[in-house]
Structure formats: structure tokens, C-alpha cells
Image (cartoon, rainbow, N blue to C red; front, top):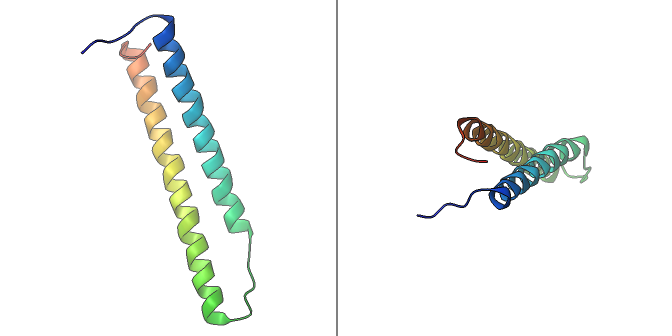
Amino acid sequence: MTTSSGPARRGRAGGVERALADVRQVATAASETLLDHVPDTGDHATGRAVDDFVEQASNALRALAESVAETLGQLDDAALRGWVR
């Protein structure tokens, strides 16, 4: 397997880190925004179903943000070890 080095590789790694940081920020903000909304459906059963859906969607976004944070941490560790430049 051939690996590239130099500015091109560093640029790609930096671009990936920036993209992941953006994904983390947007997912976290979207999760919080979802929980700020309290839909009134007028029907108890429907309202409960919508609440459950919103909570699950918010949890999924938080899980995405946490996963991205872990990946960013791994990239930082790899960079410190010289595996990624």
C-alpha cells in the first residue's frame, strides 16, 4: 500500500478534521433544537408517538456527535504518534 506524505496529505487530514468538527457541531445543535420543540397534536396517543420520535431522533444526533468526537480524538492521537500528518 502506498501512502502519500507532505502538504497534500496534511491538507486532506485537516479537511477531514474540519468536516468532522462541523458535523459534530451541527448534530449537537440539531439535537438541542429538536428537544426545544413541543408539538401539540391535540391527541394524546399521537402526541406521545411524536414525543417518542423526537426523543429518538435527538438521541441519534447526540450519538452521532459523540461518535465524531471519538473519531476526532483518535485522529489527534494518530497525529501525535506521527501516523497522520
